[in-house]
Picture 1 (cartoon, rainbow, N blue to C red):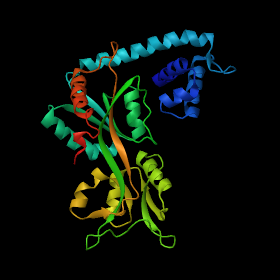
Picture 2: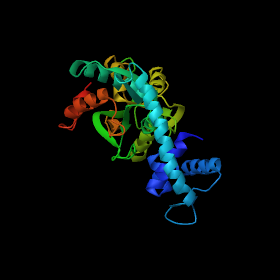
Picture 3: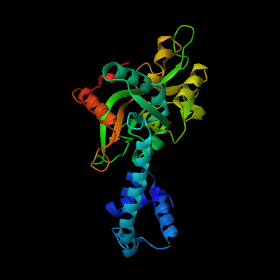
Picture 4: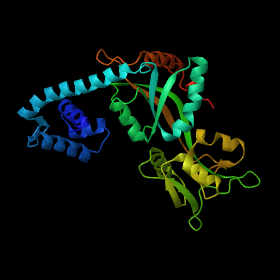
Length: 316
């Protein structure tokens, strides 16, 4: 049995909805249903009455719900106990961050914190967006830093998680510069001569953002996909080699733009999108107060980011 099955079942009992719980647990509904089935198979009894709507818990499920709360509490308690035993546990802040932000935004952000707040001890977990979110949901980190867009939102329960907008990021098309400092490729391309396109994989968050750009593009873009990866840094290197164009976060190409290695392939500015850079934490409670170092940092950032629509840490 996996502890996440207990969390799934507890969520299902509390929401009485497979779709809502799947959303909160950041998995597809079929995957969520399979995990509940796996838990029932492991226990050897039905926990959910699937003949009724809305979802109803069986008598065995009601008994197991109380036990699941106790078991999960014990598991989390042991983890917290062992973490407290580490000398640096309460002074080290664990950050879950998507790969791109870990390379571009985080180093400058930490420099700002050292200057304006205080030096902090941090441990960075560089992951894809989904796995970074799951680290926060499953208690594997103190803070989650990620991109957010209203049409591709990070769906975390506002009743359980606090959020700050600490920056903004533009996603645009870039191409290698020619000898005159001009882009070798320019959007929108043509039907007869589509532009070689360096693409994100379908599971990448930035790939879904590019899909929004392409869906909204008027006129449409003519692109010939030649390469794909889930890493923005990998796409940038392909563009620098002259293989084609790619949509890249602005912060990932600052140096290359200043050195005229790359240039915008959409000089009219018609094909880009802006994302928020958000910071999340689990809201402190009596049962889970969180680390004092995280609380102090959050208080500082709240004062910095709430008064103005654009947080000063987003400045390049």
